[in-house]
Amino acid sequence: MNELDLTRFPENPREQLRAWDAADEYLLRHLGGDLHGNVVVVGDRWGALVTALAAHRPTQITDSYLTQEATRANLKRNGIGPDQVRLLSTRDTPPDRVDVLLVRVPKSLALLEDQLHRLAPAVREDTVVVGAGMVTEIHTSTLRTFERVLGPTRTSLAERKARLIFCAPDPALPRTASPWPLTYALPDDVGDLSRRTVTNHAGIFCADRLDIGTRFLLRNLPQSRGPERIVDLGCGNGVVGLAMALRNPSAEVLFVDESYQALASAEATFAGNASSAARFVIGDALAGLEPGSADLVVTNPPFHSHRATTDGTAWRMFTGSRTALRRGGELWVIGNRHLGYHVKLRRVFGNCEVVAGDPKFVVLRSVRR
Figure 1 (cartoon, one colour):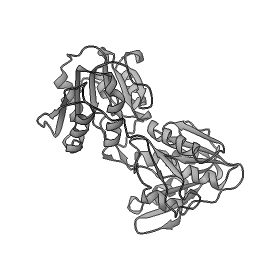
Figure 2 (cartoon, helix red, strand yellow):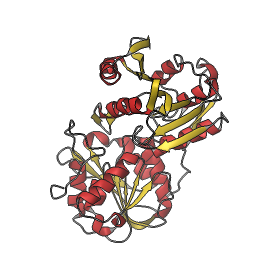
Figure 3 (spheres, one colour):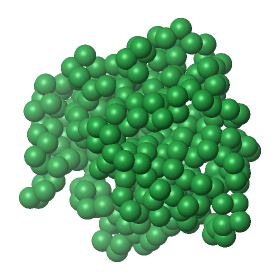
């Protein structure tokens, strides 16, 4: 990996996080370049694996728009043509034949399960299947998922706190259908959304229930009237944007996320509950939105990038919102109280007020002056 020039996306000089880790290095050492046929890489974090394996013309499957952009950037930085790697999202039809399947174990066991189910028909008895992850990422449930969907599974010894997973595919293995997506009814105490049905594709946070932070936000949403443009930024399954649409049917709601699974969930949730105007956009925060075009942005910023704790995403959401909002437009943020988002919002907007709070969460409001 040291022979390659690799970066995360978007590049952030303030962060010293690498675009690869010991699990990527362990996997590449094990492979030793001895690959054949159709190589498929699932869950590559920042394109490090497919960049290193570009000579084999691999297919990358990822849920992340940021991963795809990082992959494009890393191929270019290393003088590799973009046609050397085929980029697919988790919502695209997977290849119909897989000779080598490489899996970076995701944080979400559900996403792993769903993607193995989608790829199982293309995996044959002689397909080479190798997973990789840090020791803290590989659990008994991880191995059982490989065994249940593909076949017998074992692990390697740990090296530099990383481990490999070896799976021997069994085409005769009886498989059930993937349980994803899931649907569930919202509780009775969330206003206009009470008892409405939510759709969650695999990998979405709190896939089988409403998380307590979103529940608190739904009880403290801003008022919205008239033909406004409202942005549900980092929309997840879209319940916040749906609530705003039901409150103000004349508004256009824009659902934005970097996760393909999230946007698919938001689209399904919205289609099952509303008929007003809505758009669904994959992207990096609000980088693609016209400046001064939004009236209201509502967000619950993530504070992890894979397993690393970082405020980089929150900063991009806050600065992007300031650019996207018209004068007088508002950004509403919910977050854990200890994250101190009020400090960042005052730096970006010059103002911030507490709308609501409890011992764990706080809802904040900043106005574009």
